[in-house]
Image (cartoon, rainbow, N blue to C red; front, top):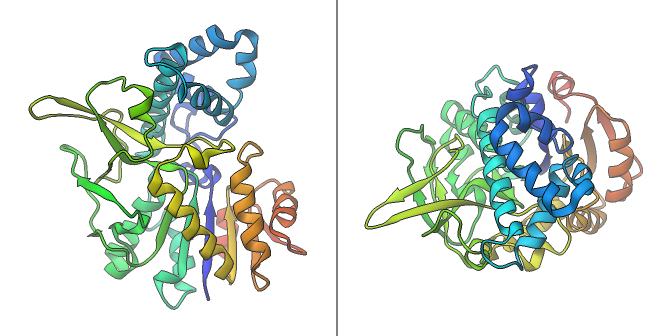
Length: 349
Protein backbone atom coordinates (compact mmCIF):
# COMPACT_ATOMS: atom_id res chain seq x y z
CA UNK A 1 0.00 0.00 0.00
CA UNK A 2 1.20 3.51 -0.86
CA UNK A 3 0.03 6.69 0.82
CA UNK A 4 0.29 10.32 -0.18
CA UNK A 5 -0.38 12.97 2.46
CA UNK A 6 -1.17 16.49 1.25
CA UNK A 7 -0.15 18.76 4.13
CA UNK A 8 -1.48 22.30 4.37
CA UNK A 9 -1.22 25.17 6.83
CA UNK A 10 -4.14 23.75 8.80
CA UNK A 11 -2.00 20.90 10.12
CA UNK A 12 0.60 23.36 11.41
CA UNK A 13 -2.14 25.38 13.12
CA UNK A 14 -3.54 22.21 14.69
CA UNK A 15 -0.08 21.21 15.94
CA UNK A 16 0.33 24.63 17.55
CA UNK A 17 -2.66 24.09 19.82
CA UNK A 18 -4.45 26.89 21.65
CA UNK A 19 -1.97 29.73 21.97
CA UNK A 20 -2.07 33.53 22.07
CA UNK A 21 -2.46 35.17 18.66
CA UNK A 22 1.23 36.10 18.35
CA UNK A 23 2.24 32.43 18.76
CA UNK A 24 -0.24 30.74 16.41
CA UNK A 25 1.06 29.21 13.17
CA UNK A 26 -0.72 31.35 10.57
CA UNK A 27 -3.33 30.42 8.03
CA UNK A 28 -3.71 32.35 4.80
CA UNK A 29 -6.62 34.46 6.02
CA UNK A 30 -5.17 35.48 9.39
CA UNK A 31 -1.49 35.88 8.50
CA UNK A 32 -1.53 39.67 8.76
CA UNK A 33 -3.44 39.62 12.05
CA UNK A 34 -0.84 37.26 13.53
CA UNK A 35 2.02 39.22 11.95
CA UNK A 36 0.76 42.41 13.59
CA UNK A 37 0.81 40.70 16.97
CA UNK A 38 4.11 38.86 16.47
CA UNK A 39 6.19 41.39 14.50
CA UNK A 40 4.58 44.81 14.62
CA UNK A 41 7.37 46.76 12.89
CA UNK A 42 7.65 44.38 9.93
CA UNK A 43 3.87 44.23 9.62
CA UNK A 44 3.68 48.04 9.47
CA UNK A 45 6.34 48.16 6.72
CA UNK A 46 4.56 45.64 4.47
CA UNK A 47 1.07 47.05 4.99
CA UNK A 48 2.41 50.57 4.36
CA UNK A 49 4.15 49.46 1.15
CA UNK A 50 0.97 47.81 -0.15
CA UNK A 51 -1.07 50.88 0.72
CA UNK A 52 1.36 53.12 -1.17
CA UNK A 53 1.23 50.82 -4.21
CA UNK A 54 -2.50 50.08 -4.52
CA UNK A 55 -4.33 52.43 -2.16
CA UNK A 56 -7.57 51.10 -0.69
CA UNK A 57 -7.14 47.80 -2.55
CA UNK A 58 -4.45 46.99 0.03
CA UNK A 59 -7.27 45.92 2.38
CA UNK A 60 -8.09 43.13 -0.05
CA UNK A 61 -4.46 42.08 -0.37
CA UNK A 62 -3.82 42.07 3.37
CA UNK A 63 -6.83 39.80 3.89
CA UNK A 64 -4.72 37.00 2.38
CA UNK A 65 -1.04 36.11 2.54
CA UNK A 66 -1.41 34.28 -0.77
CA UNK A 67 -2.91 37.31 -2.52
CA UNK A 68 -0.33 39.78 -1.19
CA UNK A 69 2.60 37.44 -1.90
CA UNK A 70 1.37 36.68 -5.40
CA UNK A 71 0.91 40.39 -6.18
CA UNK A 72 4.35 41.47 -4.93
CA UNK A 73 6.10 38.44 -6.42
CA UNK A 74 4.67 38.95 -9.89
CA UNK A 75 5.44 42.67 -9.80
CA UNK A 76 8.94 42.35 -8.29
CA UNK A 77 10.19 39.68 -10.67
CA UNK A 78 10.09 42.11 -13.63
CA UNK A 79 10.89 45.31 -11.72
CA UNK A 80 14.24 47.09 -11.43
CA UNK A 81 16.34 46.73 -8.32
CA UNK A 82 15.27 49.13 -5.59
CA UNK A 83 11.74 49.62 -6.93
CA UNK A 84 8.80 49.76 -4.53
CA UNK A 85 7.73 46.28 -5.69
CA UNK A 86 11.21 44.85 -5.15
CA UNK A 87 11.51 46.32 -1.65
CA UNK A 88 7.93 45.35 -0.82
CA UNK A 89 8.56 41.72 -1.72
CA UNK A 90 11.79 41.63 0.31
CA UNK A 91 9.94 43.12 3.29
CA UNK A 92 7.18 40.53 2.98
CA UNK A 93 9.74 37.73 2.68
CA UNK A 94 11.42 38.93 5.87
CA UNK A 95 8.08 39.28 7.67
CA UNK A 96 7.02 35.77 6.63
CA UNK A 97 10.32 34.33 7.83
CA UNK A 98 10.10 36.03 11.23
CA UNK A 99 6.44 35.10 11.76
CA UNK A 100 7.00 31.43 10.89
CA UNK A 101 10.07 31.32 13.14
CA UNK A 102 8.18 32.85 16.07
CA UNK A 103 5.08 30.69 15.62
CA UNK A 104 6.49 27.27 14.64
CA UNK A 105 9.97 26.91 16.17
CA UNK A 106 8.51 26.17 19.59
CA UNK A 107 5.68 23.91 18.44
CA UNK A 108 6.15 20.50 20.05
CA UNK A 109 6.91 17.56 17.77
CA UNK A 110 7.71 15.16 20.60
CA UNK A 111 6.09 11.69 20.83
CA UNK A 112 2.97 12.93 22.61
CA UNK A 113 2.35 15.75 20.13
CA UNK A 114 -0.45 15.46 17.57
CA UNK A 115 1.94 15.92 14.61
CA UNK A 116 4.16 13.05 15.82
CA UNK A 117 1.21 10.74 16.48
CA UNK A 118 -0.33 11.57 13.10
CA UNK A 119 2.77 10.79 11.02
CA UNK A 120 3.74 7.77 13.11
CA UNK A 121 0.23 6.33 12.71
CA UNK A 122 0.59 6.62 8.93
CA UNK A 123 4.02 4.97 8.92
CA UNK A 124 2.73 2.03 10.96
CA UNK A 125 0.15 1.24 8.27
CA UNK A 126 2.83 0.73 5.61
CA UNK A 127 5.35 -2.02 4.91
CA UNK A 128 8.15 0.44 4.14
CA UNK A 129 8.72 4.13 4.94
CA UNK A 130 9.39 4.68 1.21
CA UNK A 131 5.68 4.00 0.67
CA UNK A 132 4.81 7.32 2.32
CA UNK A 133 5.10 10.54 0.33
CA UNK A 134 4.33 13.92 1.86
CA UNK A 135 3.40 16.65 -0.62
CA UNK A 136 3.24 20.07 0.95
CA UNK A 137 3.04 23.72 0.00
CA UNK A 138 4.01 24.76 3.54
CA UNK A 139 7.25 26.66 4.08
CA UNK A 140 7.69 25.65 7.73
CA UNK A 141 9.80 22.71 8.97
CA UNK A 142 7.35 20.92 11.23
CA UNK A 143 7.03 17.82 9.04
CA UNK A 144 10.81 17.40 8.77
CA UNK A 145 11.33 18.00 12.48
CA UNK A 146 8.66 15.44 13.36
CA UNK A 147 10.04 12.80 10.99
CA UNK A 148 13.54 13.34 12.34
CA UNK A 149 12.30 12.62 15.86
CA UNK A 150 10.33 9.58 14.70
CA UNK A 151 13.40 8.20 12.91
CA UNK A 152 15.62 8.76 15.95
CA UNK A 153 13.28 6.60 18.05
CA UNK A 154 12.05 4.06 15.49
CA UNK A 155 14.84 3.56 12.94
CA UNK A 156 17.10 5.74 10.83
CA UNK A 157 15.76 4.18 7.62
CA UNK A 158 12.55 6.18 8.10
CA UNK A 159 13.95 9.60 7.24
CA UNK A 160 17.01 11.31 5.79
CA UNK A 161 17.91 15.00 5.69
CA UNK A 162 18.33 16.54 3.14
CA UNK A 163 17.71 13.38 1.08
CA UNK A 164 13.99 13.50 1.91
CA UNK A 165 13.59 16.50 -0.41
CA UNK A 166 14.70 14.64 -3.55
CA UNK A 167 16.33 17.84 -4.82
CA UNK A 168 18.68 17.10 -7.70
CA UNK A 169 21.32 19.75 -7.04
CA UNK A 170 21.84 20.78 -3.42
CA UNK A 171 25.01 22.84 -3.45
CA UNK A 172 25.71 22.66 0.26
CA UNK A 173 24.24 21.35 3.51
CA UNK A 174 24.93 24.23 5.88
CA UNK A 175 25.24 24.20 9.68
CA UNK A 176 23.96 27.28 11.54
CA UNK A 177 25.97 28.19 14.62
CA UNK A 178 23.87 28.29 17.76
CA UNK A 179 21.00 26.25 16.29
CA UNK A 180 20.05 22.63 16.94
CA UNK A 181 20.74 20.13 14.15
CA UNK A 182 18.84 17.34 12.46
CA UNK A 183 19.96 13.94 13.74
CA UNK A 184 19.40 11.77 10.67
CA UNK A 185 21.82 13.21 8.12
CA UNK A 186 21.98 11.57 4.71
CA UNK A 187 22.18 13.30 1.34
CA UNK A 188 20.87 10.25 -0.50
CA UNK A 189 17.12 9.77 -0.38
CA UNK A 190 15.78 7.04 1.86
CA UNK A 191 12.55 6.64 3.76
CA UNK A 192 9.72 9.16 3.58
CA UNK A 193 9.77 11.70 0.76
CA UNK A 194 8.95 15.32 1.67
CA UNK A 195 8.14 17.15 -1.57
CA UNK A 196 7.94 20.89 -0.88
CA UNK A 197 6.48 22.19 -4.12
CA UNK A 198 6.63 25.86 -3.13
CA UNK A 199 10.06 25.71 -1.51
CA UNK A 200 11.08 25.85 2.12
CA UNK A 201 12.42 28.23 4.74
CA UNK A 202 15.60 26.15 5.02
CA UNK A 203 16.34 26.27 1.28
CA UNK A 204 18.55 29.30 0.95
CA UNK A 205 20.33 31.18 -1.81
CA UNK A 206 23.48 33.25 -1.19
CA UNK A 207 23.78 36.92 -2.18
CA UNK A 208 26.35 39.67 -1.79
CA UNK A 209 23.72 42.24 -0.80
CA UNK A 210 20.97 42.21 1.85
CA UNK A 211 18.68 43.43 -0.94
CA UNK A 212 19.69 41.29 -3.94
CA UNK A 213 18.48 42.50 -7.32
CA UNK A 214 15.53 40.64 -8.86
CA UNK A 215 17.61 38.78 -11.44
CA UNK A 216 19.69 37.22 -8.64
CA UNK A 217 16.82 36.79 -6.16
CA UNK A 218 14.61 34.95 -8.66
CA UNK A 219 17.27 33.21 -10.77
CA UNK A 220 16.02 29.68 -11.60
CA UNK A 221 19.58 28.35 -11.47
CA UNK A 222 20.76 29.92 -8.19
CA UNK A 223 22.59 27.49 -5.93
CA UNK A 224 20.50 25.84 -3.20
CA UNK A 225 21.97 25.72 0.30
CA UNK A 226 19.92 23.62 2.72
CA UNK A 227 20.40 24.58 6.36
CA UNK A 228 20.90 21.75 8.84
CA UNK A 229 18.50 22.89 11.54
CA UNK A 230 14.89 21.97 12.35
CA UNK A 231 14.35 25.59 13.40
CA UNK A 232 13.82 28.61 11.15
CA UNK A 233 16.44 31.35 11.43
CA UNK A 234 14.96 34.85 11.22
CA UNK A 235 17.97 36.10 9.24
CA UNK A 236 21.18 34.54 7.98
CA UNK A 237 24.46 36.01 6.86
CA UNK A 238 27.97 34.56 6.64
CA UNK A 239 31.23 36.48 6.74
CA UNK A 240 34.30 35.04 5.05
CA UNK A 241 36.28 37.46 2.89
CA UNK A 242 33.06 39.43 2.52
CA UNK A 243 29.63 39.14 4.07
CA UNK A 244 27.14 36.89 2.26
CA UNK A 245 23.38 37.17 2.82
CA UNK A 246 20.96 34.22 2.64
CA UNK A 247 17.41 34.41 1.29
CA UNK A 248 14.74 31.65 1.38
CA UNK A 249 13.91 29.95 -1.90
CA UNK A 250 10.12 29.97 -2.00
CA UNK A 251 7.34 30.57 -4.52
CA UNK A 252 3.86 31.89 -3.67
CA UNK A 253 0.71 30.12 -4.96
CA UNK A 254 0.45 31.91 -8.31
CA UNK A 255 -0.59 30.61 -11.70
CA UNK A 256 2.17 30.36 -14.28
CA UNK A 257 4.78 29.68 -11.60
CA UNK A 258 6.57 27.03 -13.69
CA UNK A 259 8.39 29.77 -15.58
CA UNK A 260 9.46 31.45 -12.33
CA UNK A 261 10.39 28.66 -9.92
CA UNK A 262 13.82 27.20 -9.33
CA UNK A 263 14.87 24.52 -11.82
CA UNK A 264 15.12 21.88 -9.09
CA UNK A 265 11.62 22.64 -7.83
CA UNK A 266 10.16 21.98 -11.26
CA UNK A 267 11.49 18.41 -11.06
CA UNK A 268 9.69 17.86 -7.76
CA UNK A 269 6.34 18.40 -9.46
CA UNK A 270 7.07 15.41 -11.70
CA UNK A 271 7.95 13.27 -8.68
CA UNK A 272 4.72 14.41 -7.02
CA UNK A 273 2.73 13.52 -10.15
CA UNK A 274 4.08 9.97 -10.12
CA UNK A 275 3.34 9.55 -6.41
CA UNK A 276 -0.27 10.69 -6.86
CA UNK A 277 -0.82 8.31 -9.76
CA UNK A 278 0.45 5.34 -7.73
CA UNK A 279 -1.19 6.13 -4.39
CA UNK A 280 -3.71 3.75 -2.83
CA UNK A 281 -4.62 6.30 -0.16
CA UNK A 282 -4.61 10.10 -0.44
CA UNK A 283 -4.95 11.98 2.83
CA UNK A 284 -5.61 15.74 2.59
CA UNK A 285 -4.70 17.27 5.95
CA UNK A 286 -5.39 20.95 6.48
CA UNK A 287 -4.86 21.90 2.83
CA UNK A 288 -7.36 24.18 1.06
CA UNK A 289 -6.00 24.16 -2.54
CA UNK A 290 -6.36 27.94 -3.00
CA UNK A 291 -8.11 29.20 -6.14
CA UNK A 292 -5.07 31.33 -7.07
CA UNK A 293 -2.96 28.20 -7.45
CA UNK A 294 -4.26 26.78 -10.71
CA UNK A 295 -1.21 24.54 -11.19
CA UNK A 296 -1.74 22.82 -7.84
CA UNK A 297 -5.32 22.05 -8.84
CA UNK A 298 -4.17 20.69 -12.18
CA UNK A 299 -1.52 18.56 -10.46
CA UNK A 300 -4.14 16.93 -8.26
CA UNK A 301 -6.90 16.69 -10.85
CA UNK A 302 -4.89 15.25 -13.74
CA UNK A 303 -2.91 12.72 -11.75
CA UNK A 304 -5.60 11.50 -9.38
CA UNK A 305 -8.08 11.08 -12.21
CA UNK A 306 -5.57 8.66 -13.77
CA UNK A 307 -5.59 6.68 -10.53
CA UNK A 308 -8.73 4.55 -10.36
CA UNK A 309 -7.79 2.69 -7.16
CA UNK A 310 -7.30 5.61 -4.78
CA UNK A 311 -9.21 6.20 -1.58
CA UNK A 312 -9.59 9.85 -0.59
CA UNK A 313 -9.68 11.17 2.96
CA UNK A 314 -10.00 14.82 4.00
CA UNK A 315 -9.08 16.12 7.46
CA UNK A 316 -10.66 19.56 7.82
CA UNK A 317 -13.23 21.14 10.14
CA UNK A 318 -15.03 22.56 7.10
CA UNK A 319 -17.26 19.94 5.39
CA UNK A 320 -17.13 21.94 2.15
CA UNK A 321 -13.48 20.91 1.80
CA UNK A 322 -14.51 17.31 1.16
CA UNK A 323 -16.86 18.42 -1.61
CA UNK A 324 -14.10 20.51 -3.18
CA UNK A 325 -11.65 17.60 -3.30
CA UNK A 326 -14.29 15.18 -4.59
CA UNK A 327 -14.67 17.51 -7.58
CA UNK A 328 -10.93 18.15 -8.04
CA UNK A 329 -9.87 14.52 -7.68
CA UNK A 330 -12.66 12.88 -9.67
CA UNK A 331 -13.98 10.51 -6.99
CA UNK A 332 -17.51 9.57 -5.97
CA UNK A 333 -16.95 10.33 -2.33
CA UNK A 334 -14.37 11.24 0.30
CA UNK A 335 -14.26 10.36 3.97
CA UNK A 336 -14.22 13.52 6.10
CA UNK A 337 -12.59 13.88 9.52
CA UNK A 338 -12.98 17.19 11.32
CA UNK A 339 -9.70 16.95 13.27
CA UNK A 340 -6.33 15.20 13.26
CA UNK A 341 -7.12 13.90 16.75
CA UNK A 342 -10.19 12.07 15.41
CA UNK A 343 -8.10 10.63 12.58
CA UNK A 344 -5.38 9.33 14.89
CA UNK A 345 -7.98 7.95 17.30
CA UNK A 346 -9.65 5.96 14.53
CA UNK A 347 -6.33 4.74 13.04
CA UNK A 348 -7.89 4.89 9.57
CA UNK A 349 -6.59 2.40 7.01
